[in-house]
Image (cartoon, rainbow, N blue to C red):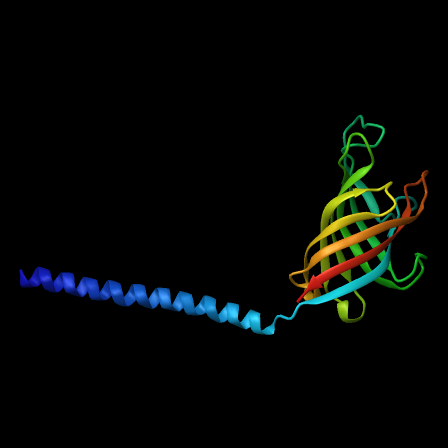
Length: 189
């Protein structure tokens, strides 16, 4: 009887010791991380203004069709494009390059020209060099101003959230080429 009791007592002590040890280590690990982030995080808000250039025509397009139905509607429903479009400081494509819009868009509406945009705005200039903003949302291209949500970011824009306003300033109906003015408002840490 004493042996069974001794084994039970040892098992109980072993269980209490190691379960406390492991849960304490896990709890401390999580607390240290969250305290460290809370101390260093100061929310900032940034406004970025740039121009987005879609080039579908010519020898070196910045957007190419990668998928689509054999018979499309009047609005091209289902057509999907991959893009690596220039972001510039001014409205001319020859103005200073500040980044690239990289991702894809698809014609996602059957009754109008609305795109599903999935893109990263990757910056190469100034304090934003190496940082990006992730945008995922609906872009009804023929509306004067379109709003799309910012769902994340990296680098300077880590934990990014906010919205991007797009306004087309030039569009060529024959080629599909366009210049779009972007005002991006992002909160980040």
